[in-house]
Length: 178
Image 1: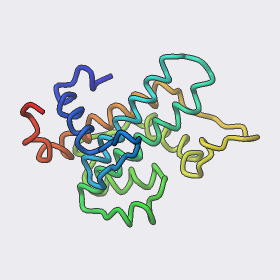
Image 2: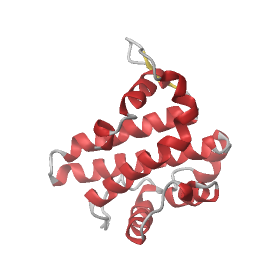
Image 3: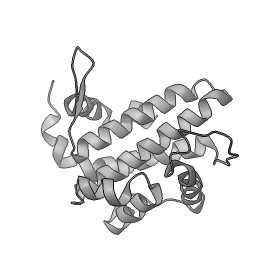
Image 4: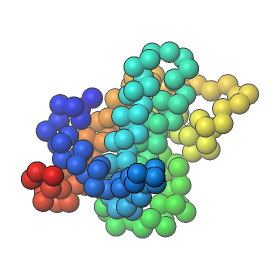
């Protein structure tokens, strides 16, 4: 819940409103830029948090999916910021969290975020299902997942770490009133 206590949260909320334009007819248009990807990642994390309040087994799989998607979008935001094209993100990295993380680390993410061995193992473990869309279609297969709270903390910390290098210059001019 770093966004509720983080001084950047009001800036992030304004960024979300400016990057995702929702019309009265329910249409949404999201810009294909790093700040928009990060803002959308933040929204997926917030949705997962709302589900996890329930603390029931029914919300585990949807929450795990939302957390993975938040991490994917945050890593892709970092990669876009580093100059990787949207086309390459779609064609090469797709939904592979391990590949996105490795590419982001090659682009210098390690200066801002260091994942523990447990966190790396959690991402590797859940990526086995997420990359193949098995979190969305988990029929008839036994799966083993990392602890949801630890995964949530990893995603939260990742978003926090990516925020400054990704958005500092973009949001500098947004610090005034709406």
